[in-house]
Length: 406
Ligand SMILES: [Zn+2]
Image (cartoon, rainbow, N blue to C red; front, side, top):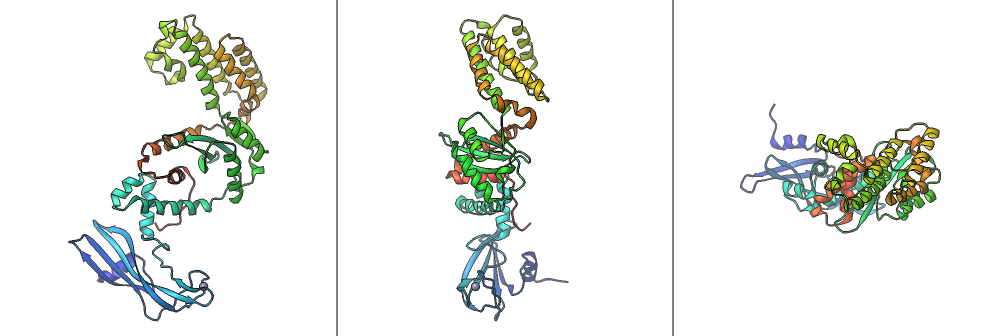
């Protein structure tokens, strides 16, 4: 069996009646492959709007779409696309099966760009396929928006929220994560209480039920706390344990800085007190061991921090409650000002810290997401605007399903 090139491409592109490939022009000089598609004379088409069948063509207009390269040759599809006269809707342009309306790319080309954007920056894709990045952003934006509009949030019960800096300036976006599958489901500009209410609106639109949200994790930001209490009254708030430990670490560091001014032995020891012991090198571990034998304020502060770190291993809330009370007494009687201050912060957020014992949720997953976001930011020369940046976070960290040819 031998196939004509037209038949071969017809099969490869899945071009079906009434469409057919009329001619192919292959030009090695200009490194182009041009394929002309036409429709059988006398064909009737569905109205693209109301789907009424058997509409007669009224006129046609020439369109061009960029398709996947044929080896190293840029490939373009051409077609005179008919406009039909619909009894109900008037004159309408027919939708072709190989491309979206108004798009200059075929669906396969769209699919390639979406696939590449999951791993590559848009500027790298632009260079790779030799297209302007704004055209690629438009395609990616379209598919992300479409997939987001179909998000089903009806089964969501555990949420985490955290803010992240999105530009080199001081602009922030807040990310909401479904803690059951670790996917970003919502991004809003800013980090005030309104981000929670705008999330609630979006959540409800996607069949999420605020009454079903049992657990909500956040840092101790009053804006988030207020937003969650007002919009998700059924949720118990758990303060993120990494954030709690960060406050404790800052207190230890403050004690160390003050003491270092009068005690040279603490010079260049900053990270030893902040890192978890199993992340220290052997040399650092030895150094920590000998410092711990000295009578230092920093050592006391460190021991209080390590004791709080042990709190999270409790599973029984009565035991955990007693543990935290004992810890609080120790910390507030330490005579170390930064530690006393940190302990009082814990006291004001007691219930949300205790809630961890039952909920076991943290924003640890958001730390990982945040590092993806920060690496996106580092390669962000070509973002052009915050919306593109948000599109990219959804694409890399969201739970999106795309309707695209494979
Ligand atoms: Zn119609």
